[in-house]
Length: 348
Image (tube, rainbow, N blue to C red):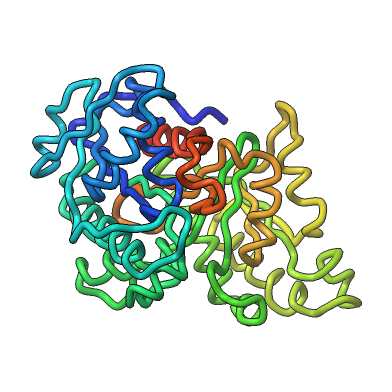
């Protein structure tokens, strides 16, 4: 299915810098240089000196001239010219070492996310696109959340005045030909297995259904992966499919959702990806993080997009990490960020 066509947005799209010691600043600069039409109306929440330094180093490699400009707010950012990279300063600027985990870098990254999220919650930006964070750096800086998704969920709940459980969110990972929603996110595998409950499954199905209907205008056709090898082989390799997953699917069907399964997890992604014009699946629901991310990243890491379903605003991100091993070398690939920007700009 097509990501849609770009349409004029009445407000800027916010891009967070990500961890300044990683490739976030580099892929943002390359995105602005390579795709002025796509980045038109975007502004960066981050650290002006970091982005200016990166731009100076990358300038000889870029196809056109860019100028890093500090802006006061999103309104001023929306007036920037096509050769400008508008940046809203977030938090305190600190010296950081490229490719190294540090509390300083984690604090700078968190400040950008918090500022941009507040802008999204206030309706000041049309969507939020987040460059990669380093979870250890966040932890060192005192941030209690394991990643973007949990931080955004907490900020949204606080803004709405409800408990965190009142903003149920799920990760949807996309690459060309495949979309996957996860039942659990950043938890150890043992906890992920324990998270396969009828309640969590039904909530995942409902969040996926509601979000897809809002974004695309029709109810999604969902296939559900099993937890165990061969989807349990009728209880021979595990009982979760019989005791939990199948009953949750039947309850969802009774509520009118288009859903089927559970299917063996070693073939369900292949089927969903290879339908060649006879597509009967929009989304595969995976039971845990790596079960869903491995096929998406294998099939299309360069164009992979992570979207958080269930938030009161659109949020997308590249489907890769901070890549500390290549940070500062000028070789980072911006295609996943460009795909995330396109996804954000084509939402209703």
